[in-house]
Length: 462
Image 1 (cartoon, rainbow, N blue to C red):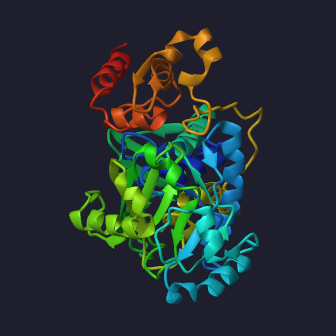
Image 2: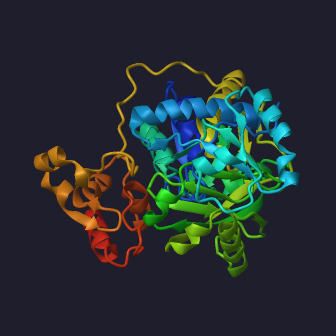
């Protein structure tokens, strides 16, 4: 650590991007502080997205986003296998429903190949309906994108942050940055609840608030306009309806409404795309849900015959620009990572790699940390993988893995216990849900919430 500073690098924002940057920097002999305004890691935009692992086939060629999504896809796919993040490479079908949409196919394929993604091609209408027989009538063709997949949006930022903490990162939750100022001679002072923090370098990964942090230092390069995306999650009984991700032909505003399986065994419909004023406006609307249901009835009518498990809303950090807003000011020691939209989950590890390289060029000393990286294995929450309740050998070793607390999601007392005793334990029911799936199912906690709360309170008081 440089003399006169409390930390070498302060990272503002512990969403999937901020946590990935913390993990990346903790590979080096640096003191790293990860600061999050919310009560937990990944509790904002990162937890409420479409949870697709994008190949980057449809990104605008030549953009930073196109490069980082393609690189991030490779990095995250490999990392997920190593640490136990659920991923399913289901493939995707981009479906045209009229001649106008069908006419976009040549441009979409050309863009994918310009981005280096060659495994893309058109399907006939007959082949489309053979692959997805429950699609609604009227499709005029499709493009196959076999590399697209689904990933757990909860485990990913938690894995990044956990690995950073195990490597010595100082994680500060429930710690909003009240002000940020430059120090004479270099570095920054961050005003935090209960005191201040002096940092030699600052990384702004504050998501929806990244423009506000940027302006604290006198910059005015982008403005975040929250883009609300409403989604409907259907019951697990709907899962056999969908074999692959069903994408829409994108528009200038959004990528359209999709239907996709989730790693938890449900089916998701959405999102909408509506600009809103408030950065905390995660309310669903009658209009938005009616629109989704109408789109669902057109794309896959049988889906609407199934029960809805949940409705959720995410806010994307849209800007007036068509690309990620990532810049490093070498003279200040300041990195701004803004405008990271829905592809940020897929690109997160590549964004971290890019920021680390840029900070190194800006003077951050990057000396590899001595010793091996701590071994990490996250609880695999995927429905396609072996869960503790069905693992006879594990239950024989520890009967707590056979005692179910949440029956909708088949979450056991052993999993709850492990989450509460982990390196990054939850502080509330929302955090417990994202670590175990408890409270996530059909009854939305009606049956298990009281017991979960008691277990959480018991851990707090112990």
